[in-house]
Image (cartoon, rainbow, N blue to C red; front, side, top):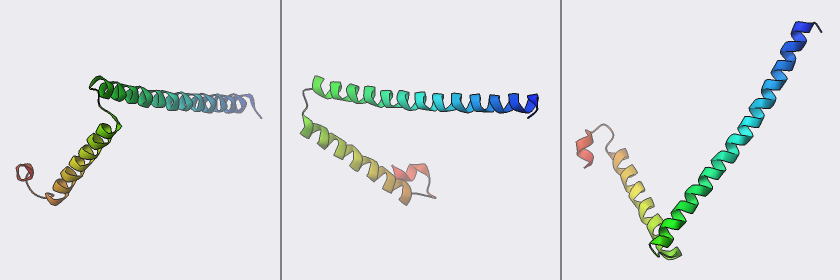
Length: 85
């Protein structure tokens, strides 16, 4: 193999290794972010002295709210934004 092709191949391999390393770091950071967000949510519920049942009810109510908004948006396609209110 000529020297220029060999250098290019080596550079490609180094770049692929660096990309793989950065992708792994990104996955770790995203996981850390989720864990920190979860800790923050738990802390908020504990601060308000809410239990698991309260948390479950809260999540269900928000899910129902989101589904209601989604339904309204789907029904309102083609209508003016004021019609959704």
